[in-house]
Image 1 (spheres, rainbow, N blue to C red):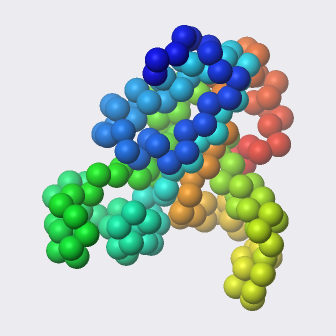
Image 2: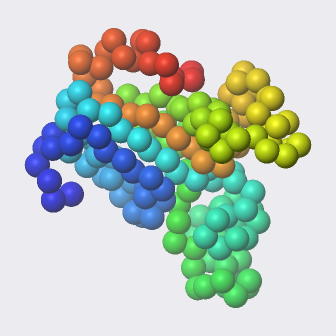
Length: 172
């Protein structure tokens, strides 16, 4: 990124990492986010879950479930949706591994974000009311399959040590 070290109080990476390339490029993306984030800064990270049922760009069921590369490309071509699949959605273990490798503290806030979205948009209709009634503990057990994975992040520093132990969005 064309910015000095520690240039920003807040860094937002919203569904970007899936477009930067393979794991090395994704790691580099997060390293740059860490580099430009101030020592006491905060970040927001979102990426589609690899285990989403319908891929949002191509609108094809189970596309991201296929092995990387040729199988995904063949599926996209056979459905007349393009020549190749150029996204790399991640799983919870993959996201968390990338965060650890780049030294970023990273509470998973997916369930909290789901709750906030339901609160803001209102749980209208029987299906949304049913979803809103599901306890957080149940959501945490199935968070590996919730379509958007959402994390807060911060540089792993002494200044964030107190926040690490008491962050209200941390969901274990």
